[in-house]
Image (cartoon, rainbow, N blue to C red):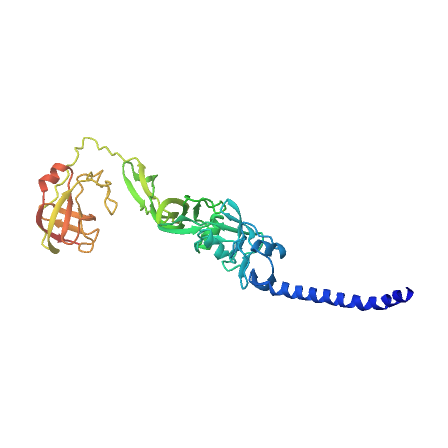
Length: 406
């Protein structure tokens, strides 16, 4: 009996070895079969490709095995419930969270767009050249990026008499003018104020203000001064000093708005020449009265109108005037008081033809003194002094012979 047991003990290891070997062969064979039945799949995630061998039945099973979470915003080339097939290529793009603000409108998005430009195109958000964009169009979309778009609007600028339309996204009036290279001078007026904010449908008005200086020369009238003269017979007057007007220069400041004068203000006035007063001596001397006993007053001898034989002869156009004519002072240019002596024989002449003070004879008038001048007396023309208007009308206008006696 013991011999049989020893025999069995010796044979036992030899029986176990073949069993282990067989099990190993089975495992290896099963493993080979497992690998041979795997599908080869290419998964491209965000542009990076990876080849995977898998026994997953569906795309969802494959992504679960790869620990890839797919949500509704992600971009997947295959349906999650699609059957995995050998040689399948699956493209997966993970959506990024982002924010967009257009003016004051805010919204949150998930997008698979790669650039800012692509995202704006996908969402039909139009951005013009005048709008303000927080990012470049070529910038990459990153997680939680915040894109801000400020839409531009038109503003009309009235610059003096000119008008132009510009685009702006806001800011101050000053910033808008600087951006459009519009210079504001010191005295110009701007509405609204340059520090105020720009708003849509609110035009800007610039009033261009310029100043100019104007000088105006005016005449200062002289005054007439009368002084008493006790050497001059009472009732007589004599011009001592002829009056002469002065000169005054006034300076004005002219204000122009958009080329049109709106204001004229006097800044200064300066006397450049003082006027000279006209001085007239007024006689205060009482005339002497001499009474001769039983003596009759002598009759005034009549002045002869007979033509003298000597003297330089002229043929002249003659008129008549009185001491009380318009513009007459009662005194002649040489100081003769014809107002007090209405019968005084005086003629007005052109001094370049007949010198003042000359004794003359006038046909139909008699001898007289060339003692006066006149604005219309020029050349061969004279004006004879007569006592009153009646005599002037009677004399009329005539052509006479005139002789200069001395």
